[in-house]
Image (cartoon, rainbow, N blue to C red; front, side, top):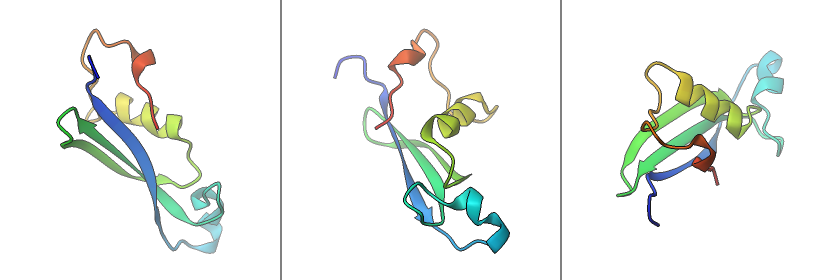
Length: 87
């Protein structure tokens, strides 16, 4: 795909949490999990991985966090952010 910089997607890893934390870690399917976001370049090499957001966090919240962290994912200048799409 012309102009493609890479791909990103998220998944869950099941975890056990204290009773008082279950609301934050409960996914939309009801399991307890943390979010994992992986980013690959156009050559299918991982260039960024973030683990730790609670299972209840939605994709855009995790992505927004990743691109605003000082050590987070860097999107090259001149790239229109409306073209950043998650699966």
